[in-house]
Image (cartoon, rainbow, N blue to C red; front, side):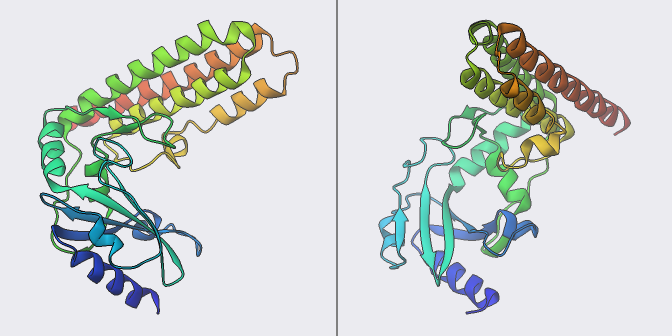
Length: 267
């Protein structure tokens, strides 16, 4: 079937599942940046109790996880499926959690949850970011703006984490030539700093794939590569990797926050 028929087919089957109130398409196919081989990212928004067995009963091949199978937080589960020869991801989204996060974000409140494949973890306001960039296929959902209180508070929360991570890399791994651990923490800290930059700009983040690029921190790649290329791997080399990466991130966060304050003053 062609892509329009495929969208109607999948949205129809997902939208008919018990407790599901809305279905969206997200990811690269929603924002037009997809490749021919990109996955199809659907989200089902349910109210109350959702039973993944209903999704299994549709009969699409793949793996369907339980609610809470991915994390106990907002990114609570989903499925990896094959539908009409296309790779399909289905994400579970609890509308009660969406309501809570909308209210919390207006007060500048959020939490950061660990999630596989995400260096910095995910902010609970990721739920709102998804709503801001989705293509609605079934039902009606809110389209939240980035709240001023969140824009004011989130950069500081993220930067404190980045500072501590850079500090640990410098003090506990760099002096001993532990390249893997040091580089890993630098990458984590840069991702945390990138969240700070984008929050200060009032820009939503839905994943980490383009996070450093969007925040202007892609140069961290060069710092890590240069450190790895130095065969000595002495304490000075790794400290330089940490320090130059931290300086780049600090400058980017400061600039984004200053721009945010200027924006607020003019609003």
